[in-house]
Length: 216
Image 1: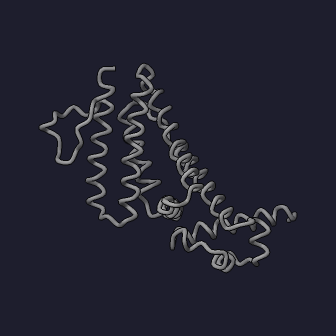
Image 2: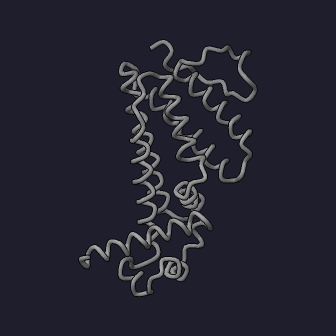
Image 3: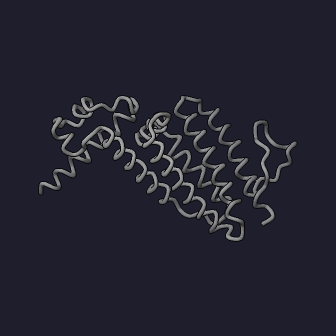
């Protein structure tokens, strides 16, 4: 194999090992010593590819973000609003509230954002990209609706998604998670004009929201 090919394999091994470490023990566990040991490389090999551990973190988060966007974009396009809500639910449980290595590693970064500016920037871009993708799906289904109204639906969805993501990884039980999402879904459906129950008929905990699209 050519030298460049070997270099690419080594770099990929470093990133893969870093993802595994973060997914198991969190971002704080990603040290040079542990990464060198897990990847089976020398210190010189690590710093040949990455000047600092911050660069390792940045590449790992970029790869997680890229892979997540590929997953988001791989789902079939919804043909109506009901399918759109089904799509959101499937994405949330397939990609966020799931015990996969990628999801655990991503949460490791999310939980470290309080004092890490670059992580905040990269994560904000990721979630903005997801929101833009969903906005365009909604716009394709409801082209006559004002963009601001569609954006409101997308922002509410993102808030619910992050809530479920965090609840899953702090160990909330499955029944509570399902109840939480049931209420979230009800609110999204009402925003989309799919939920016709009166306030008195709403299950306890379902927020009262303004129907944005019903009369469009």
